[in-house]
Image (tube, rainbow, N blue to C red; front, top):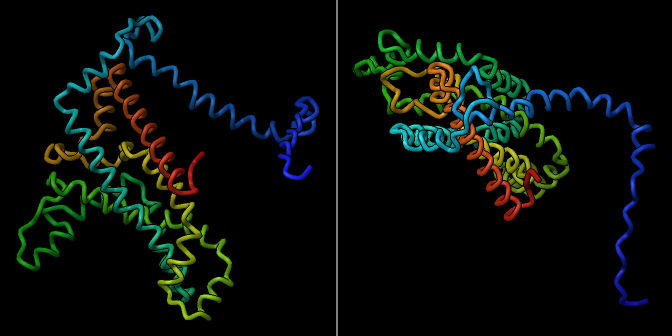
Length: 313
């Protein structure tokens, strides 16, 4: 009948018995991964109960008395709370602003570099720092920035500038942390964008060249639209982990002189949990950190889905 609405097609019901029998080998391959996730991601969640209890080792987690939100209130009322939160967000946002665009720019530049030998050299040089361990990286920073013989102070000394204790200056801590991270991670992070750019049809570049498009116009009209979904997903994930500042590097760079700028949630949790042995209090701080990250991830994903076609779900 003309104009009549078509009924939606019926969904075919899956008969799970024959289906599993036919594909059992695929599920057997998946089983180790499922077991791994359950053991190392879900079973440890049992320890979240510590955040709401006054932990007594002899009583165990279940036997320890409930204290509700006492540990959270203690953390929020701590005189260090505002400083720790400010440092954590400050370093995270600084890192996001400085380090997120860098691999995109490098990938775009390498994609249009036609000298293959030079391209391989640049890739090798930019990838290499990623394989330096965090401990070695911090050791290099301490040596290079040493006021008593570091290469940086030797260089600025040529211009009559007095030696500067860079690692002891709280005002310089964030810049040293972020810029060294940009140098270390930009090359390796650009790989995913280079991989996304390989999906671009070469005929698009040929057509653009025939039309007289410049390299900049090719980047804006061809490259950026091609990697926009990748940029969106990685940006959402970065925002979702904005309070997870790299603990190991910050802890190794910390000293009494820069503590005002280097104490973050990760280092504070480590100190009160493992050094001061306040496991219940540190669990509450860690749970607060995870909840904040989860909320930011949900907000970022919702906004991305509303204003673009890119989202995690």
